[in-house]
Image 1 (cartoon, one colour):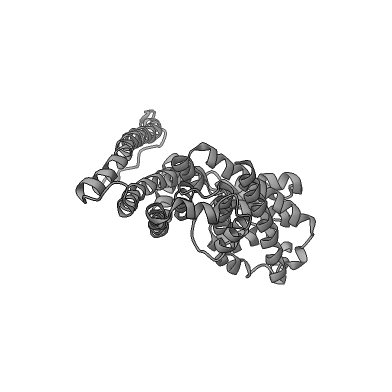
Image 2 (cartoon, rainbow, N blue to C red):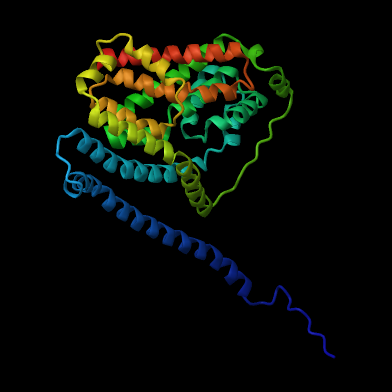
Length: 367
């Protein structure tokens, strides 16, 4: 019986070489196809988006036969227009942000901030907080990782404040719904509060107010895991972000739009201007106090902000309300209690709350 020997790897032909050369070509071809499909999808998205306003008017006033200018008609038209509008914007934004976030992992962020001087670190932490994945449930592991990596406490707080407060989803939704000026004011004021608050907390030298078991981790070594991602992986991360974030927050978005619709349709402008206007000095602290126990996310609170501003509420008051809901929410304080003493949480609330109050009063004075 004849034994067939396997062919020598160096057979003199270029079959193996050709196979290796085709693989990148196939990847590039797949990437081009994905790009074309994405462009076609965006064109379709844009066409549908531009039809939402005329459809909402047709639905409320022609299909349902409601009277234009009526309370119910205005509320229905607002809800039918804003619900698909916000959800479409949210889906597009989350997909793009999901891809961007794949370049800024939590591990890499800790590595960047470790060993930085507080002044420089506060600025870097606040800027990285905008694009780094963060939610209330990840506050504890993030805090532990920063402590273990040797990141100063003040720098850590600049990151933890900026991440929820200067939410990139809220930023783009504000731009889409209320224009670039409101979005820019939100961005700049949020960053300033995060940077200054972190710097102030760092000046107090309150590391001894961190829970003891967390302080013991300072002696440990932080493990930084680097990932190598292809563009296909990053696009997958974008879709994963859409499924995860939109799947969780859609109910809050719809609820927020429902509240906004009720405000838009039934609340008189004179009433809202009286309780949240510039002339009511107590409106800013009241807005902060009311916002703290509320549990919502940036995407859910933006439609309420849109409705309040449309009814004559002052920009500074509404901005203070929005920031307190996002940055000083009670659930986040409960979660942070696992790693911070009550004294440090009180300092955190006091410093950030003071920054939000100052921002509210300042913008009520300017605008």
